[in-house]
Length: 84
Image 1: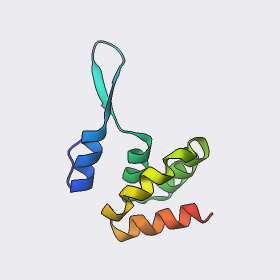
Image 2 (image 1 turned 90 degrees about the vertical axis):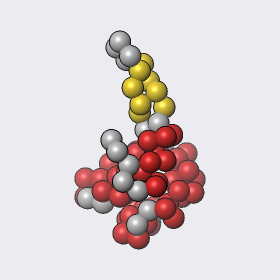
Image 3 (image 1 turned 45 degrees about the vertical axis):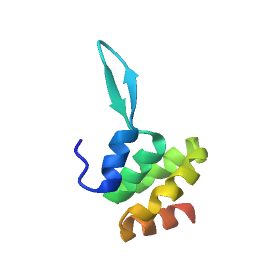
Image 4 (image 1 turned 135 degrees about the vertical axis):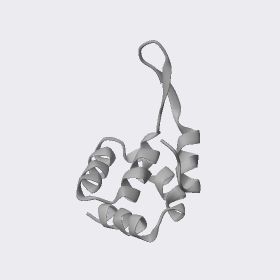
């Protein structure tokens, strides 16, 4: 993945390496996955975010801290999801 925007590059930099098989590979953090899904903005992305939050509500503060870096439609989607 190549980050087009500054916030996307930060997502890549924060990725944690996981070992599975012969070598480690980067995996984005849960909050960063939500940011990527918010940016994509599709109905499946919104559903995925709801499911992630149902399992791990602790990521909300981390998402909200980074939310200002995203485009307005992504911030609006976050508000709709949080108000459900």
